[in-house]
Image 1 (cartoon, rainbow, N blue to C red):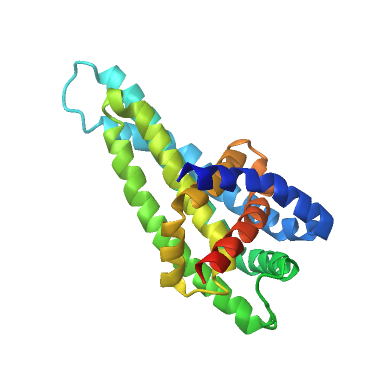
Image 2 (tube, rainbow, N blue to C red):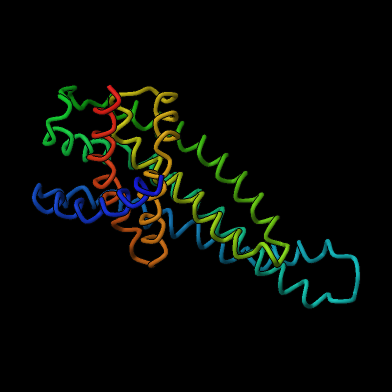
Length: 246
């Protein structure tokens, strides 16, 4: 279990070497542009609406006693709620919209590995199929991430559980981030249901990969490189396991 988790993390150092040796830096440009645009829109909305959501939550509290404390907690909770939802939307939409470019990056690495022979031509039809699949995966993951995140945030209203809730949200975010990075390789070998089963079987590999992805997003500028790095880290590990499972 935890072995795959640490493999998912350590794969990033090998990914950097792979990107450097194969001169794959050009694959960073388009995801970075998409990331900047979506990040600006989503997190600006979350910033401006945080206080409003917090006040709306505090208005549900009917008593005067402790009203100020409840308001402060509600504003914090509202900001955390919007930030979590914004991160979920941002992460999955970037992964979906950048899917043709990340799929091509993954394919270049796969061809070099020699584990699979990839020869399908890269056409506009294939690009469209990849975007549709990416959006399908994104919508599925968004709905599940939102459900589990909101559930944990509600539990987090009980102070005793707050530290565990933060850790739980991080693991959920990491799992679905890793899911997206792994699917850029899986889409060439498995259908959507097969990919879901594969990632579920190797969930700790996904969490390990996704944890670095999420941490990079939190650095402020890491979102510019997080997606290509996570894709390059995930591809060889996914190929190894596909080979072992054959």
